[in-house]
Each structure stands twice: as structure tokens, then as C-alpha cells.
Length: 139
Image 1 (tube, rainbow, N blue to C red):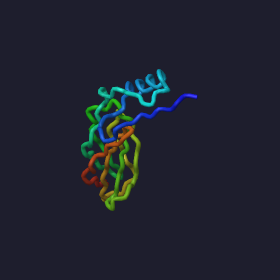
Image 2: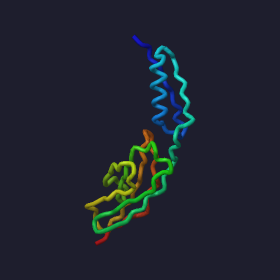
Image 3: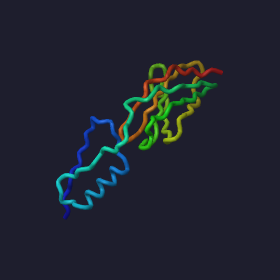
Image 4: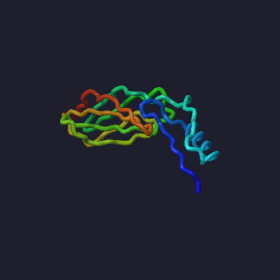
């Protein structure tokens, strides 16, 4: 029976796990599963932004488009969670948006009500934007 090994990450850093990193861990583990630790070079890890710019909302008749700017380094980005809040602020809806897309459309909204939105980038760890300005659908 093979021995187990433990790999420890410093969660206080803002680096992402690259595919090269995962490959090097697998290779190190396969090469010598009896070792009690594995040294892996993480110097090539990608930077995860600490914050995103607030999204911009464009209202329409019972709809709102929410647009945002992707992080500079989005190579490890899995996608986004875009959350729309009402004025209370309760969650109205959350959408998963695939990486490479920077807009979400919310429908069936109440005209003349205020909404705000946040965007959370998903990297295995999350980075959330500040709230947008008020988005008020009108007829």
C-alpha cells in the first residue's frame, strides 16, 4: 500500500494554480509516493486580482444588461457569478457566465425598481466586484 503525502498551500497569497503546477504535483507524486512532502515550484503561477471593477448596468423595459471588464490575466478563469440585488438588498437572481463572456442579461424585472449587481470571478478562489450603480428598468 502506498504512503499518502500532504501538499500545503499558503492561502494568504494571491496566486492561482496553473495547469503546469497541477502537472508538476502529479509527476512528483507519481515519481515517489513514499515521500512525506512534495516540493513544487509555484513561481510561474498566475496572479488572481484582489478586486474587480464594478460592473455597469444598462436598463431596458423589464430587463437589464450587466457588463464588466475581464481581469488582465484570465488564463485560469473558470467563469463568473453575476448577482442581481433589489433595493433591500435581497438577491433577485444569480447567473453563471462562462469565461470569455462579459455580459449578463436579467429579464422579468419590475420597471422603476432599483437593482444593483456584483460580479464574482471564479478561479477556485473568488474575487468579487463592488456593487454597480443603481440599474432602474423603465418602459
